[in-house]
Structures are given as structure tokens and as C-alpha cells.
Image 1 (spheres, rainbow over the protein chains, first blue to last red):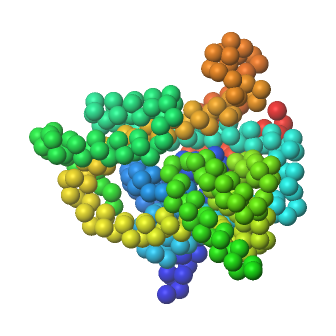
Image 2: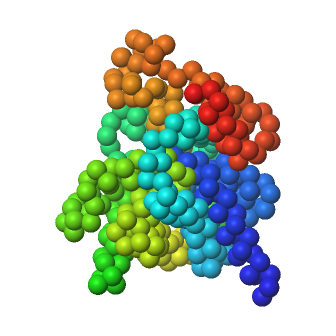
Image 3: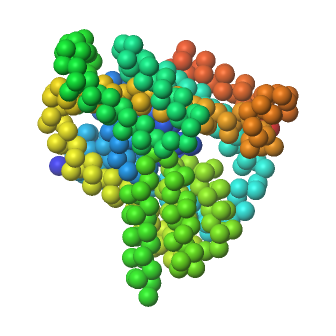
Length: 198
Length: 194
């Protein structure tokens, strides 16, 4: 019992730390999840991260809280999910309430702007490294390489909502399964050593 | 009547969360329309809130809901609004994930992930460019066309940011340095050089 409680507090605090450093979108969480939960605490495995993102991108809501809900659930079921979500939203809550109370001209301060510009620059590097790692897991053959390329081009040069591109990837996998059973068998045999969503 | 306002705030942000697919910006018009209807905040106040929510850590959706809730109904408004955002997706995860997990070895499920993974990679690669734009291109040029930016690289590009990003990239890929430390250092370097 004590152990379980300890574990939930541990989950809350880990996600609290991640909540503090989540600047500019949920993808920034990836390197922190890798460091804290894959390397240090061994709560999840490296190759699970991409499927966690795939699932959380397919449901509505903010990416960072969705990811926390799912990772928390994988670690300790419903209670873990609640602990993780409360952890990741706590820093935002505290910071925003402080700013709203004392400091509504916050965004005009030069020192704040400069600090955030520095952080954003580092965030670019963090997401860039994450994108390379994730691509290595995702690109297993020519098909998947082409899908990555199409997705990037659509996202950068059109106004198509990301959810439709996600639905495209979903349909692509289903289409191969139903229309090309032989290709499916080949892909699944090749991928058996890494496809594992648990 | 505070209870009624709290319930309205809660429902507003549950709705926002349900319609928020991939990216916090889609929710702005939704909240803005609702705020106007109840006359809770002026549009100028709301724009300030968005600006602060983008700069501070955490999801834009969470920050915005906390801020709006606080302005409308104080600390309880902030609590109710903040909790409303993750609630729908948490319920979805708790209900759907066990079903998915039970069927994870089904070939159809495996093939769906085969198709989804490259799209996820694409989303993250695109995010590098989106975040990169706001860091690397100076504020005067951020709304201008690509050609304008290319024509005046000395004015349009922020070389300090580029340097931080490159040094960061090398450190992250070549060493086991803690990313939290890197963010702190980047903030300090930002204050010193910009």
C-alpha cells in the first residue's frame, strides 16, 4: 500500500518536472520522457514512444495532457493516469495564477522575452533530435518513407488540419491490410521484432 | 451565481478539449465566441492571455483555460477550467486503451500502427520547422513571405538563436546531457546575448 502511494507521488513529481519544461507544444516532452521514463525509471521502452504519440494524436485534447494520461495509465492504470495529468498541469496552473495575480504585463518585459527566445531556440534542437529518432523507428521500408515525405509536405505547405493527415496514415495501414494481404504478411514478418505497442 | 458561472466555464472547456485536435490554436475562435456571448472578457484581454499562454510552459490549451477561468471567476474558476481540458481525453484513454492493448497483436492493429508511425514522424519533423520559425526568424520578418526572408538574411535571421540551436543539437546528439539543464542554460544565454 505504502509502495503504491509512493509510486503515485513519484509519477506526479516526474510529470510535474516535465510540465515545467514543456515549452512550445507537446513534442518537447519526448526527450524528457526518454531521459526520465525510459532511461532512468524504465517505466516505458524507447520503441513505445512513437505508438504513444500515435494514439494520443488520434484523440482530441492537448497533446501534452493526452500523453501524460496514456503514459500514466501504462505505469499504474487509472490512478497513474490521474497522477500524471495532475502533475503535468500543476506547473502551468501555478505559473498562470501567479502571472494573472501579480504580473499581467509579463509578456512585455524584455528580460522575459529574451529568456524565452533562448529557450525556443533550444526547443528547436530538442525536437529536431527527437524527430530523427522517431523517424528511424517509423521508416522501415520505401512505403513508410514516402508517407513521411507526403505528411511533411502537406503540413508545411497546405492548411490541412493534422487530424486529417493522421486519418490518412490510419487509412493507409488499413488499406494495405484489406487490399494487399501478401504485402501485409511481408511487412508483419519483417516488423515482428519491433512492433509492440505494450 | 458563482456556481452557475463555474459550471459554464467547465462545460466551455470540456467542449474546447473535445474539438481540439493536434494543436492548441484551433480552440482560439471557439473560446473567443463563447467569451463574447457571456461578455466575460474583451477581445484585447483575451489576446493578451493567448500571448502569455504561448510564452509560459505547458500546453497552450491548459494555460489559456487556467487564465480565462481565473479572470472570470478567481481561483475556483481557474481550477474548474484547468481540470476540464484533460478530462475528456483522460476518459477516452482509460476506456479505449485497454481495448487496444488486448488487440495489439491483431494484424489489422499492427498495420494501422504501420501507417500511423510515419505520419507521427512527419508531424514532429514539421514541428521542428514551426517552432524553428518563431525562434530563428526575427519579429519584423515573422509574418513576411519566404522570399522576403531569403532576400534579407542579415536582418531576417536571428543568428544568436541559430547558434543556440546548433550547439544544442550537437550536445543532445553526442552527449548524455540532461535536457532540463540545457533549457536553463539556453534561457540564461538568451538573456545575455539578445
